[in-house]
Length: 187
Image (cartoon, rainbow, N blue to C red; front, side, top):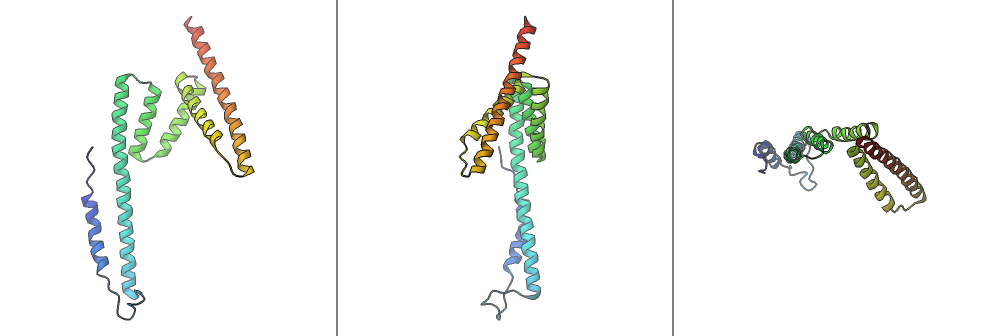
């Protein structure tokens, strides 16, 4: 995919760069490199404008990167629909795409949490339950791999491991109940 063109944005900072180089330090303070009076104010203003331009370029670059990533997400979403992928996975991809396009990372986090809680535990849909199980297993593995250096951290990690093991058992029980219901319903 072609890179986005930021020439116009770069051009905004050109006059600032030229103006910055025109600042002169008078002969009395040349050894110290001190700029005083109106020159100091101009210099501070130019520095502030240059920083604003740098921040603007960084913001535009981040947005451009998000646009490129969202285009890839949209393509993956359409391919997933055509391939008959799971609707829950496709919905999460759509949330990720919207999140990238808007810059709203909370949308994806909240949407994922709600989807898994409502459709997983609430409605006992198999795929969201499997997604929840995978997340809990992943977190449990990371907790078990942690190497705390102090006793307080070790105790907190141990409590977290126990809580995740309990959560894993609860989700597995829900998943087994769902499988049993499906088997009973299909016969």
